[in-house]
Image (tube, rainbow, N blue to C red; front, side, top):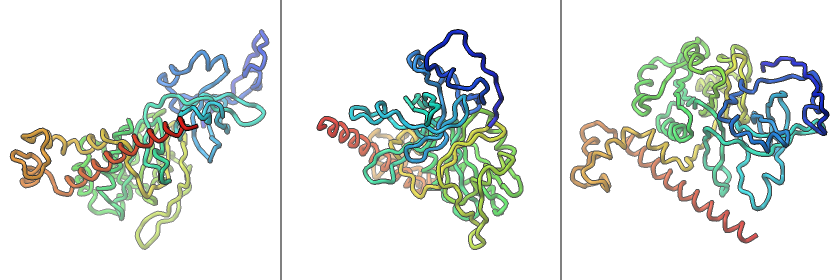
Length: 371
């Protein structure tokens, strides 16, 4: 973390319990803009926030109900203000990794989180815990790095799923093909990815040989946040260390049987690299249930939807109707059956999750009325 020692000048007028008096004359000051704090968030700070001596902070780790945050006064732990987040008549969201929040410093213990600032981007999934609805995984990122290994676990269908979530999130998807040094057909794999991700930047890399790392580092601008998505053991930690220029994340050896690394990330965390790039690393997720992602499906399968709009009838079922552009594209090879089926599958899942989201909201309203 880049810090500088700044001497504070005591105000001439005494202000009771003012936070300026709670901080020592010499304090470590962190430039929060290094953590992605921009005018988008600054404009959300209200006079009421200032009157309560609240300051902005970014959530960098979460351990149950304890939040690790970074503010202008460095890193600290914080808890939610009960009246603002736990009241029966409230439906406010809890902070997630990457969120900016307004906190009140507490010199005698943990800081207090008063409220959550609006997000510029986020991605969520169906909560793995049955019946718990949506789970926000990371927020306020600029790029979504979709990690796919070239040596063992390459899976276009999974990548299509990740692309759908990335487009829906508000961030810009970038495909990172790891372990290029263990693959002899890199260009073939790049072409396969291009076929399902038109217009998306693709970087084949190797943390061993250094291939592609400089290009990726140049791609990430200082103060920008990147979230990593990908399965376990495909080289995320190695990439982060390579980008940082030092070991900031633990890596484990590669298994000889399948050339896969053992998974090392155990929890989501936000890290400021020495070169002022910001990353959010996520544990490899076995499932990524799409949650309310119709727009993301449309972006990922824009080529397919372009074809569907060419059908003679707007309500075409793409079965036996005359003038069906999809049927024609499947026959002449402009659309593969595999991609068509992937589109239908993700479209069905998105519609199902959308209905589930509506039902979940209705259930919550009923429960609140019954209290």
